Image (cartoon, rainbow, N blue to C red):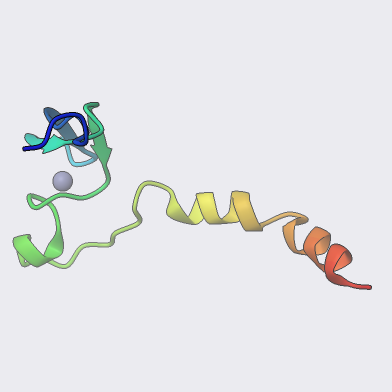
Length: 78
Ligand SMILES: [Zn+2]
């Protein structure tokens, strides 16, 4: 490998919302918090599961709820 052009690539811990943890390698070099992994994803478990990825709906409401569209409407209207 050429010197000085590659980011740091180290082993990191991945912690899933289901409680599963495993190691992978990443250039973030920091622990990764994930919502879904191979141990709990329906594709691998073969079971149907309602996946609300850790409050994604709440995040959407927080970002786009309230007066988000009111503000954008007033700024685009000329
Ligand atoms: Zn999981």
